[in-house]
Image (cartoon, rainbow, N blue to C red):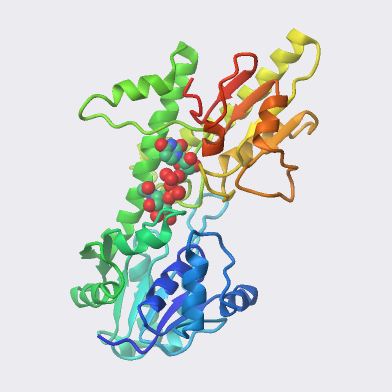
Length: 403
Ligand code: SAJ
């Protein structure tokens, strides 16, 4: 199938790399974003997000004229909805961006077009959007193809995973699934698995909830081990020697914009049934609160014992190791919480950032040298080069020294 133009609604962490990969296949691609600054940046061949290797592909495809950005959608053959689906204050999913993007392309749709939602969405969203489309454009009923296909890429490795990960594709009918598979086969080398739209929607939520539940188990173990005076890292390593046990690593909480968010899309719609999923969210959130309390209590104990306030190094602000992304970061939350009443005596470290608009950053070696209490919140590679120092109080929430 030859596509005259593919239109991506949303040029964020997933939309932009996917648009660039499609454009790199020589397919004319239009990226649409409501933010004119983002559109200008991309049209200059530059990017507004951080992702390894992305700037080069964007530059190449913009220069080669296969990728172009605009604030308005244009008539195309394929429309991909790749906008954020945040949640509201009460953890109810907010699909208003998906609705707005759909309404924006609605007048442009024509016979044989393909409309795909990639945004993480509550179960039933694709059917809802299809009903919306057909209510306003009844002449398109059975004439266009509608499908849901979630992304699964890991921030930091997006360009590779976009091409090599398997994908799950669910249409509102079999022909829609087939048409969507045909489109993805233009750039995906992983296997394309067919299902229906509701299963594909639930599959995305299940993947991230599964990881959240598994991390919650590790975090719960870390709380038990702290009380029981057992090294949780050693415990997990030993338990994982069992051929059918594979426990993840505890940390200072779960962050990012996916794993800490998507499970709420299940708990909001299935509150009675989703007991484990809901509890896992609570445990992972509690772990951040507990870590902040632990730091504050250790500071108080130090002050009582030594008669002076301690210097405290907060090691890491990112939401996971070796990235500079602070969105929904438990480490950032903990830093803010422990510094709430007073800011003196804290050395904040984030080796992946040059500067931060709130925190004054210190080099990791310097902070380690100067601090009386060292709280490792993220297991960045730089921290693993440090030698364990018995003369310091080390709170290792991230398993840097695994002790
Ligand atoms: N974490 C732990 N312990 C672990 C592993 C992770 O505490 O053993 C923490 C991390 O520190 C971080 C959080 O979990 O705070 C999430 O990190 P992650 O690396 O597990 O996942 P994300 O959010 O970067 O990306 C996830 C991926 N989903 C799964 O692995 C099931 C990715 O494939 C998805 O595409 C992405 O969410 C998304 O966009 O949904």
